[in-house]
Image 1 (cartoon, rainbow, N blue to C red):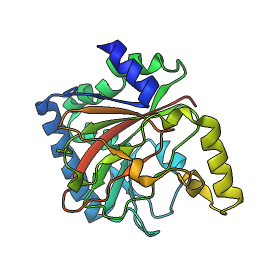
Image 2 (cartoon, rainbow, N blue to C red):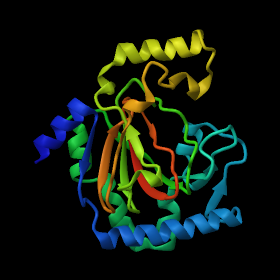
Image 3 (cartoon, rainbow, N blue to C red):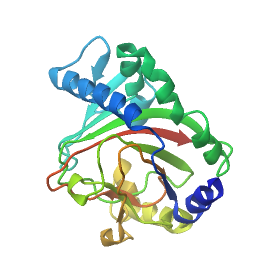
Length: 246
């Protein structure tokens, strides 16, 4: 079975491991996630910061505290709450959750990713709260290098209405092509910052939605072209762990 997962990761840039987390584990994580969302809407607290400075991704990721980044101020990703390092808030509210969270960083997941690149290490965690994101950011890549996100579905994501994560399989292998695309975006189109990684050389219609049941794990190479399907009525709640070579 593991060889099939590895083959899919190498060929397609993603793999879905069904029911990796139990329904009970997901229920505990979902309850904590919704409590965190409610606290975030009320404002800052002793255990939760809110980013009002438009800090960079790396600045937020390296914090040893839970930080809420509210997206949507620049024309897309409205109704998207992104909590960086939610594990700190979770563990303070319920220390018994720690062994569940550690499944992201110990055992089958890192063992599989080490076979892709021995330098990959777990970095920050995030909680994605999509409350009906009808205008997601355009499809893009996160990096040219090996950079993975491990997504756990805490809510049902088997229908396009929830605005599921989507990608174009196999595009992680187009490293030179993707590099030239980013160069074109920056030097010819004048795109700055993260916008330089927009997938201008790829058709959005090629995106394949990742339909996940509660407890399913999606391991995605983020050098694949990816984005999200516009939500029409549903919502989705996703906990994720990043792995990077840096």
